Figure: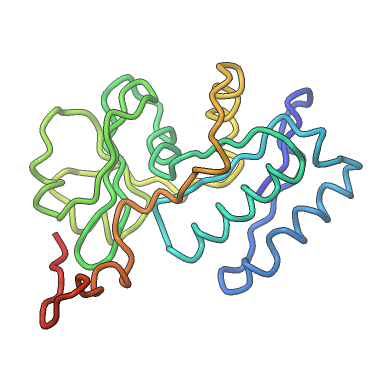
Length: 211
C-alpha cells in the first residue's frame, strides 16, 4: 500500500508491504496510521486506488473491500486498477504488450495492452497463450510463467508495487473516470472453487467442468 501527494517530488510519501497472512487485519489500521503520521484526513484525498486483481482470492477481496469502505467513508472517488495493467506498464515499449501472470492449475491470467490501453484480459491455458497472435512483447514477473512460456522469450520484471498504480490513477482522475463503489467487484478472471464445484439447483451427480 502507498500514500502519494502529487504536489511533491517524488510523489509517493509513504509505502508499506504487509505480510500476506495478516494483511486483512492490518490493512485499514496501517492506512490510518500512515495518514495520521502525515496529518491527512480521509475526506481530503483525491481518490482511493485499489489493485483489484487478478490474483489471490483472499488478498483481492480484502483489498477491494477495504478500498470501497474507505471511499464511502470519506466520500472520495474510487479507482480500480488491474494487476495486469501494472505489469504491462512496467516495460517501456511502443509495441503491443502481452502481460501474463500465473493463475495456478496450469492456467494463466493474460492481458493484451496497446499504448497502455487494455484490449482484453482473460484466463487462458498455456497453449492458448502460446497461440496468441499479434507480435509485441511478452512480460512476466514470475519464474513459473517464464519457464512455461519460454518459447515466447518473456521479458522478466519484478512484481509491480502499489505505488506504481499512481500514473494510471492520475490519468483516470484527470479524465473523471471513477468506479462505482456499490458495483465494483474483484477482477478475478475465474470462478471461485465454490462456484466450480457447486451442483446445479435441482440436479445431483454432476459437477461443472473448469473450462
